[in-house]
Image (cartoon, rainbow, N blue to C red):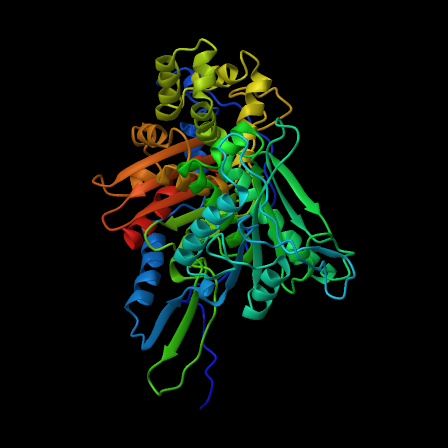
Length: 573
């Protein structure tokens, strides 16, 4: 049968980042406030206002604008694709089903005599005990072998829920299996990676935290696995520490571990925490904490394989003549779909005027997303979402420092709903115990703890004399809205509640029907128009973030955001 090479423009494809402009804009001017007379301190969405009078009008007259015809053409493109008489059928397959993971719960009960020795590595004359019982919880009295098994069984269940295949080297404490035999079991099963679960101990009860271990690059037995093993160990450890709050002690290289030296696949040991430290020991027996432990490991494994969220393979069969073909794509990225192209079309006239444009949209029901990310942007008031998150993360400390919780809540509310800059600056100073620089450090630590590297706070609101700036990046703020939606960060419900009370409604909210609920936060400067939102649709909720910088017309930017909002709503509602 003849193989058919299919056009993939209407499938979910991995698309390289699409540029809307050149570089990151770094300058800003102060504009006057609106004629309404509102204080500048209330408006870092009016750090410069999208002001309007004759200047805006004159500028608008020379600018290309978003016309009804443009929007109609864009929507028609999507509709024609949806209405096409497609004979092909597509099946979404989870690629995790092709991956086999070996989990090795370290040690085993002292009831099993494993005192006999075995070679430390293939052909090695160094002999080590086949296995030991491990350490014990100094404060809980739980033996390490039991903790390792408990976490490993929960990890197995979670990985299987994700779609992975899993083998366990042991599922009870009394099976006699040596470290060499465990490695051979994973090798012979054809596992893709081996995760060895352990816990640590120290003479110093003050030592706490987690670390991972791999064989070194110079290890004569597993040196060829070093890069993959290190990448696995780093990914798992980072996500584990992020999920649990454990101190990250780093990736340690060791060539003395039998279970590593006999491996023929990428292998790592995770030392989950110190059973000799009271906090670590007690935490690792807490059911909720154990869930965080497992979640972190799973996220690290997903990232190692590049399968963080919503990744599938599309298998397409053409039914017209019996021939078939497959198009494989490991993401639900629809940037190059007709919808993505329509969004891109709406940005075209802004690009022609020199604007830097970034759009991120994600359907929270289907996992489909559009990513038109180009650069970091001056944040305007979008940074206030991170300030709010930092405040809730530090609420107990702020109250212990003598601040009123009700006063803090009022400031957060005003900062979000009316973009009050004084409230934002006061909250930052509270975080730093009256030291604004220290407060901004807390905000940046919070941003970093989320894994974001492009967003940062460098100055207070309205501090235009500062040498520093506030920045956001569209996929990071989109991811943060997802965390707010899922309740994954402290204060998420309150932040979303205040966003729903937002008084600035001219952009994303104006593009959807009044019946739709929108939780949004805007940002405006002299040549900047931003809006980021969670939209609660009739059939599906979704995230939409539009960041437009270096605009020649703010009013045109507002209209563009509104048009993109309407287009996305019509498709995903």
